[in-house]
Length: 187
Image 1 (tube, one colour):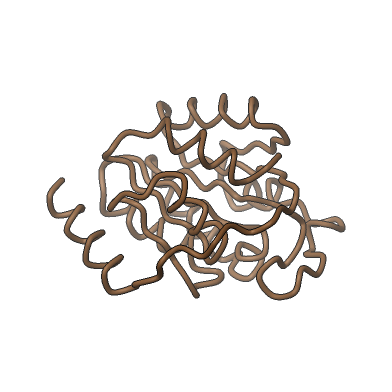
Image 2 (cartoon, helix red, strand yellow):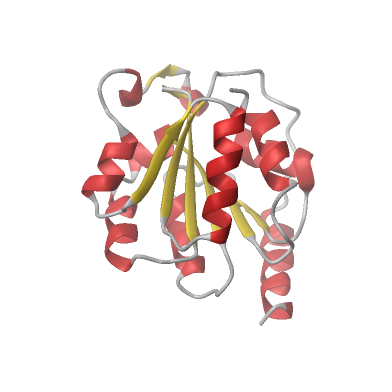
């Protein structure tokens, strides 16, 4: 499965109230290319923190919050899965793009290339709604279900590494300002 194509499809499904937090680098770039909007929070340079940020938002927001995270980032901060299991936010969907490598730091194989199973880890943390998918059709079906169902959900999407898109304009202050403003408007 190609992450960018899947992101394009999934972002076309969400409504304007849904918050999407994007993992560093290519995932955030792909989100911006697919559908830039103020309810997207791009986490450039925050490896390991995407799902933590999404969790914090979900605990303080009534609509759906989606984390487009990566396997390497989740492996760097697995405590987030334990906290999600403990807090049990009904509005949170964590989608982990698993290319089985540390893509941003040299493309070395990550632990998921060997025996580490992020779905089983999420289950062990008390997250009951988990699934691993390896194609866009299955991903779209479970994503649509997760949008209309109580969570939390952890969806592990097995992807193939692909070429990176051009880097989107990175203006952290403007991203944060516009995101905060969009959250106030919906309060």
